[in-house]
Length: 262
Image (cartoon, rainbow, N blue to C red; front, side):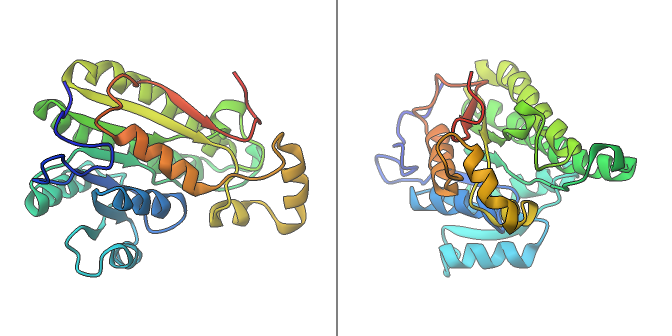
């Protein structure tokens, strides 16, 4: 079951109600790009992040009037935080159609040097956060008969990671598995769940993780010879969030310059 009165841009054909999306970890990097792409496609967007001030800044840049974008503090490790965020969307705009689980914690550290506490911290944000988001919003989407969930995975979860830590790679592999589990469970309720697995992108996170002196070698190792554009990843998320994406679920979409082929 899908919304038939909405266009791929997020704006209903009759102009009565825009589609509504929430993006986690949207105060910078890929998350901010995704929020901007959804907003540009006609969505009302909740820009959420652990850093509320930064989320508000991004939202204000999208719409200073706060009519079609607003910032919200969200700790993805806590189920009540997701419940509060969903309630805020419903109170403000009367609807919720799309969840993008983008929030992530990345620490580059040799596997034998990762302390258990750091492993748990990364898994709590990346895996627990995705699980809770899918659970809270998936329940609401199923009840209304329509919804789109897009989880941000990573090439690291497919090839074991190279520049990233083992805990990050393991968490992203887990996200791809959770995507399949929730896709199967929610499909009959008109809800699709997909993942996007980018390789290295031109983002602050990648530039923090890969020293400048190693960037040339990394580019040379990528078959297409360049790192990716986060704006393309954002455009793919918009496509997967559309009402027309009803026949795509449980899939992981690769955007990695040919580093991982299947």
